[in-house]
Image 1 (tube, helix red, strand yellow):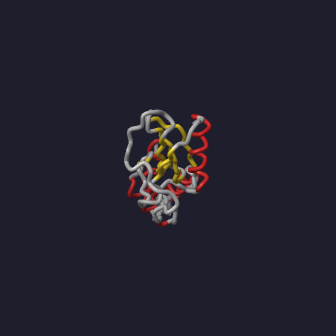
Image 2 (tube, rainbow, N blue to C red):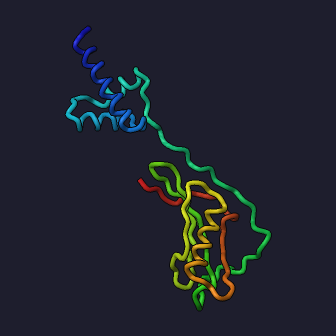
Length: 169
């Protein structure tokens, strides 16, 4: 066996160790960075070629959530009518949902904002988009603010497609 073949076999052992240490996530660029950090002299193309030959693959990413399309709410009329100036606290709250991409997948965040103070009065975060997400945010707002009269809660969940707002990297 030639010296290059022996060196390649030794390199494959190091590649497998780095890939396994990452939980099977790292691809050729990160495995190369790991090996360079450990003092190994190698190029990213050589690492990529060895990984391709030995069928070592990193995770390519996660799926984006598909947009949810709903129909307009027929249960309640729009009482807020874009009137966003409120004279006292706990008269009108608005809600929204956004999704946040993390290293472990997607998280969904629902917030409730008091229009008078322009502060978040309730929030909830869950890994799945479910009705409990919004209910928990509303319950937190009620628990924290304890409104005495009636509160208008405006939500446009059903009126537009759901799009992610930002990404945490």
